[in-house]
Image (cartoon, rainbow, N blue to C red):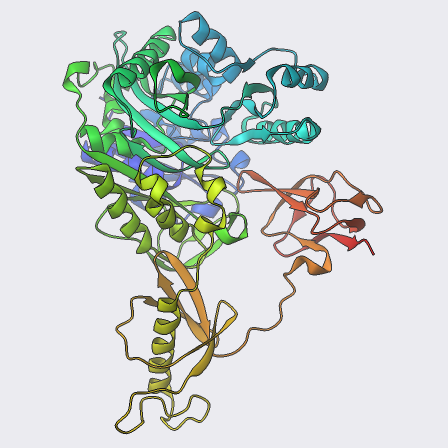
Length: 625
């Protein structure tokens, strides 16, 4: 076994790998960009090496700098985590050529499975069922459009080197194909250095089923059962669980056997995940599950597999990379109970899930569940990296108990001023369809505001009123005329109403002296922030100032700092409501700023390649009269 390991990554996965390494007595080395100099993973490691400036291409994605860091720190092995260089065959080869241990699959296996089109052709040869589509070398727009017509709509465009929903676009209408193709190609080039795409038929009630596999240098391959990652938003996983609801023994046997067969076809070693798409229109059946792709690395959702099997998958990675046999044989791996994981993101569900950046001034996560995180109070969510704050993971005897416990945990999250999806996660976990196991990848889109909107309930209003009155009692005279003599009526209950605002909406309520069910949070100008069921609310005594953030004036403002990657229109062009005017790339994803109404592009102040600051006016649309 090697005695030291460098993790070529950041955030929660670096911390996760360090925990196992330190338990095994292995010295740990962190790498970091300038933006991460004080990050938890840096403080957790035994040694740390600076890579470069904040942008990933100048730091975490620079393989030469990572290898130099390993040499300088005396590391014997490199663990790539996930993302960044984890599925880069050239980097894996460079690590091995430098005489270091590569904690990952052989470069040949990475190449075989790294490009989705080539992987599908290989799987067909191995007898693994694949999703119908087009995986050809001809990438001309004309050929792709013709293949799209052959496949039929709706369909998916996927970057061949993609993952995590990047470079993936659903197209329902042929008229939208060209724009979707261009966007997928840009994301593929930006995130993976490869603009090529493949096309797949779109399954109308898809379930996302994946199988964890492990191989060793002796040619042995085992599976650690399946996970269900069907609850998704724009192809990004939201809730993951193991095992998959509704999976019977026969279907499980079919899909896990296909996964093992696929891994053996590429002489796989280490941790990998075979991803399948299932047509759930008639439940889960072995003959209606198709191979989509293989992720040749550890997955974000690996903790749920750890919880139901009782195994440490990072330890397995270390042992296999060191040349040891697999820790267990197939008949020694068993399922126990149910596990679920929720991805807590810095994003605003009420504003189309736009990422939220900034300092974590108030930061509280539940302490009675497993929490994998790479940030801490006082830290910062940066524009340069993925906006995931933490993973909340639970393990219970039954699925119902796991969902209930995870919902409770999401409801206990408190973060300010960065916005999170905690309340959204809680509503997803409590949705009747999810609780019943009736899940497919379209559930969130179908429910819309029912899941995304944080409602100002009567409980929130009354508790805010009571907290507001109590805070007023501490700092003001009881005869304050503005708030009336609340609580001072002799021989009668308090009845006077006070007027205040929650998230800018006017409210009126009396003082009931309740024990609040909301959590009192940080103070802000003119009021305070409260937390309830994962959502947060700004309570103020005074009406908010009229803002300029509305799009009624036609101004399209940058929701966050980022780079302009597309500006398909020019000043004077006619534009329809909802049509993209400017496309901003930030936090590894594209965000289209669309026209708020039919009109004309009156002004365009940016060009492709420009950097935009948060709040900057990028374009102005003038409404038709």
